[in-house]
Amino acid sequence: MPDTTHAAVSAAERSELAGAASDRGSGIPSRSERDQKFGVYVHVPFCAARCDYCDFATWTDRAHLVDEYVDACVTDLARRAGEGYPAATSVFFGGGTPSLLPAGQLVRILEAIERTGDAEVTVECNPDSVDAAKLDAYFAAGVNRLSFGVQSMAPHVLAALGRTHDPANVTRSIALAREAGFERINVDLIYGTPGETVDDWRATLEGAIALGVPHVSAYALTVEPATPLGRRVAAGAAAPDDDRQAEAYLLADELLRAAGLDWYEVSNWAQPGEECRHNLLYWSEGEYLGIGCAAHGHTGGRRWWNVRTPERYIAAVQAGVSAETGSEQLDPAPRAEEACALALRTRGGAPIAAAASGVVAELAESGFLQRVGERVVLTPRGRLLASDVTARLLIAGAVGTR
Image 1: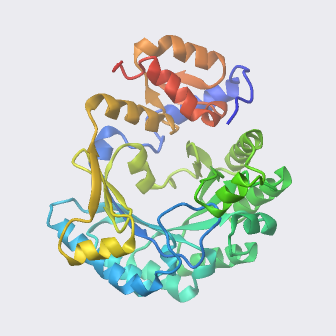
Image 2: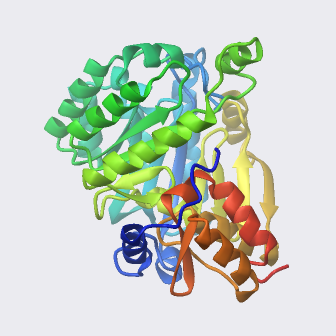
């Protein structure tokens, strides 16, 4: 995304950033807190329909594999339990469409995961694939957080994205969730779809705020080559516009913060205490298991990932062999740089070595970041160029490894 302005950061922004970066109330785990937390990610690769922008490991023609896949996940979890991992402080069912599974099948997987008494358990849901009975079953089993794929409140934008639900279904599903007892609810939004106007995006944000949910995620639409959207763009259709996406991001930040949802990661806003604890593990380099096809894990300082397709995952588990297909062990220098890059995406910011002080001063003067004590925190304008700002800091020796 482009730089939108080079004006110095305002006094109000400085005050807000100073509060955000303080250890108290930042929502970002300290090292000691991170070391006490452990997550489990479960990938559910089944979908009723594939969205036009999606290049995730999902399939619309594998429903006949659901029972075997669930069995494989349960077996894999049982084997992993023998490796001595701690009880999970967070569990996240992602996909795909986890809510497409029969409730009993999802609950079988959840019951196979050893959890702490206060574990956060999130299930991603499509508004079209939940009903009162399913949500009641989730809640009774210990699910305590839902994440709904809303994307837009404008029907023509949903159609352009290949989404099958309508805005009325969003309102219905969240009402059902509350009736079932859920208080922790997120809605995912996408901005920058070709054909989406500023008024469309404003209406989507206002619609999400009106739902009264305590957490909103908003992502810029990206074009992946091997998707229907990617093929349309390659054939000459309009692509997302960087300038419009920048404007949309700043509008989201303005409206969500005014509604009491503060940013805590570049694409995430939440009421105090409502940050997604599982995702905080990722951004703080915590440890987690990956269960299911294409799932990634991070344990013992090693990153690893499973085979991509459900058939291969089922076959591996049934054969009693590891479903892992690759791994990496980062050396200290690249790990330190990665930790810095991830921390810079959060409102807690990152400590920066003295070697980069000159670049920090330049970026602060240009309005991209603010130094708060020993840490630097991105401003809203800096978040628009988070990757570029991070690259400049790392090249300048931000973590003292160059």
